[in-house]
Image (cartoon, rainbow, N blue to C red; front, side, top):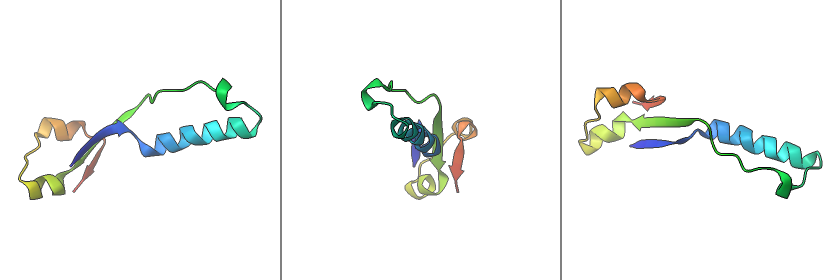
Length: 68
């Protein structure tokens, strides 16, 4: 119904950057681990409605993606 975490698109790009560095000769042990910098809030209003859960408009307004 709701999810909050790093966006999959950004995670894919970050993963591609790591692969690129490794293919160019970097040792994986020398590549620093990075934490996600951006998180996304996704709300599935359709599921919430079916479960009888009312999500406050103030929370819906903060969502990066809304599934109707």
